[in-house]
Amino acid sequence: SDYKFLLKKVIENKWLGLIIKPKNPLNFQSSIGPINDLLKKALDTNRCYLFSKPHNLNMEISKISDLSIHSVLRAGTSGIEAALFKKPTFFLDRDNWKESDLYVLQKDKVIFNSIESLWEKIVGDWDNVLNENISIWKKNLKYFNNYNDNKSNERVIYFLDLLNFYFLKGKTKNEVLDCASKDYAKKWGDENIFSLKKNKSNIKFSNLFANN
Image 1 (cartoon, rainbow, N blue to C red):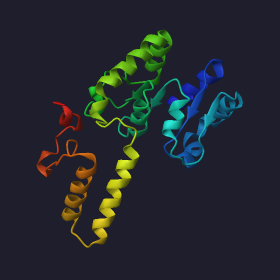
Image 2: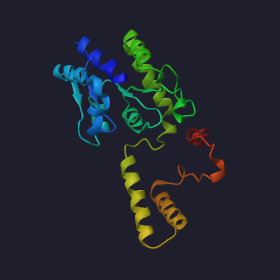
Image 3: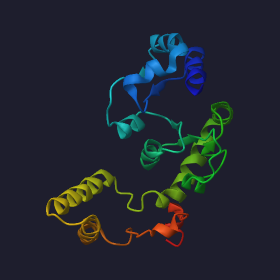
Image 4: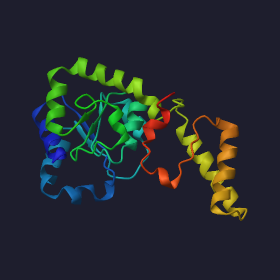
């Protein structure tokens, strides 16, 4: 597994540190089963840290990391958050899921099919690989966060509050969405609000910004 590979590298290389932020920290150790002994050895080096409780510290983790590796392309929120903090960020795509909007980024520069190929690339030319990664993200961040102002949480909370407000007013689902979207646009602008019709299910998110 990817964890097994990285834990071995921590044990073998004294220059390497590893922060593990599992999606489900409470059951992480039971899920990795056979490599728990390896995890303990890595933790004992004091160069490996495991977040064992739920948290919302993605940005803080990025601050103290040289780079981030996101292991699931199908759920890329944490990886995108790290990239927004202008840190080198890599994605693993073991399933070769090219339908992902993240493929506006470059294969074998941001997206890799295996942890082994990513490791070889990074270790082979550390500075150039990381600088190139940052440059690619910089060119493409508009596809994932057109605002780029570190206020995403504020906007999400504001919109959720609007949904709740109009729901409690007794409006229908469509009315709730319409009213909330209009109020959101008044505060944050309407240039990043899109309406997707049911018969347009093949629309790629990144294409919405193609002309921006």
